[in-house]
Image 1 (tube, one colour):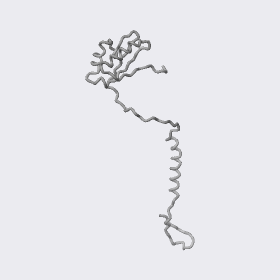
Image 2 (cartoon, rainbow, N blue to C red):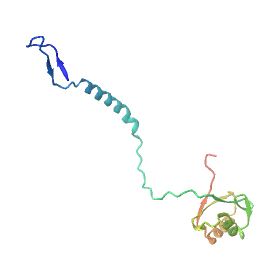
Image 3 (cartoon, rainbow, N blue to C red):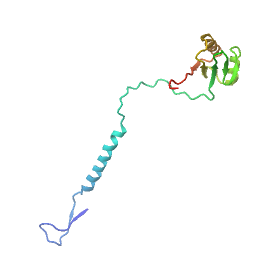
Amino acid sequence: MAAKLSGGGGDRFNVEQNSDINVTPFVDVMLVLLIIFMVAAPLASVSVEVNLPPAVAKATPNPPKPIYISIKQSGQIFIGDFPTTVDEMGQDLAKNIGKRDPAHERVFIRADEKVRYGAFMEVMNTLQDNGFYSVALVGRDANQ
């Protein structure tokens, strides 16, 4: 509340109450907030328009231990760092994954760029024969 100490039409010892709202502090606060929002609003928006596709694939957890099969130019096959053959690859993969289901395991294949296509297909067929249907091919980054 404000008090009117002097003014026209009354004696000087008469104190009246002023019941009007003092809006000056209110306007000051509003102007400060307006300036803050004017500065912050352009920073919160992205100026590049992109038409994003809907996310169809569900996120899958990472495998506990990735399985890498490497095929050298000479045709040698490795599971991780251990050599194997096409005939023994199914048994070695079963030992590697333990009791996990091979249909849910992802196998990463790393092959030399000069590997014969037939050798690569033998590995792929052996994987499918042993129940490994999720295969990822590993390539070199184009910037390297």
